[in-house]
Amino acid sequence: MSYEVIIPKPVRKQLDALPEDISARILDKILSLAEDPRPSGVKKLKGFDNEYRIRIGDYRVRYEIDDEASTVLVLHCKHRKDAYRN
Image (cartoon, rainbow, N blue to C red; front, side):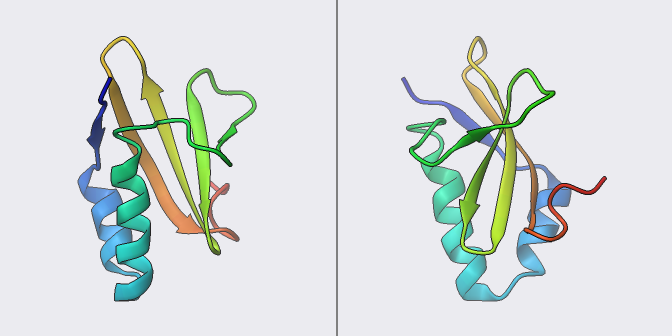
């Protein structure tokens, strides 16, 4: 089963602000969530029903999985020092 990966405009802006090589690596990992939304190394975030995070070097990608609608909504893509601040 393939999932639809949704990358909202604010997250695209976060990716665009990163160096090109890092941005490309993160985008590849995000797009791979379409085939496997829970890859090895994924962590389910406590206090949230369907929110997960993956590590890509010093960066963290937080996302929500909706299994009924087969969608992955990317919430944030930030450096690890900023990823968990609101």
